[in-house]
Image (cartoon, rainbow, N blue to C red; front, side, top):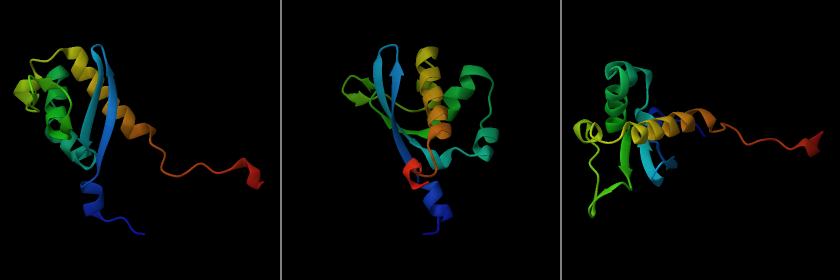
Length: 109
């Protein structure tokens, strides 16, 4: 079955991120992570990470009271660096570790 551009752009992934405070479930827009998007919002340091996460993350289970903590660049900039680095690292790791094909069987030889 062919893959369309629309398929790629609509992809979402939910991952569990290990943080110093415990596990955090994060749903991010896999289709939004492109070379062009990285270049457009490329800021140095932790500000760049906050900028990317604000655009990539669709939802997470980080709460502020009973509400989901906002996913704006300004809101992310007041969170601990360690949390932002954990989430950023987990998303980037997820981009690189997912297999594209099912592993074959050794019994077929």
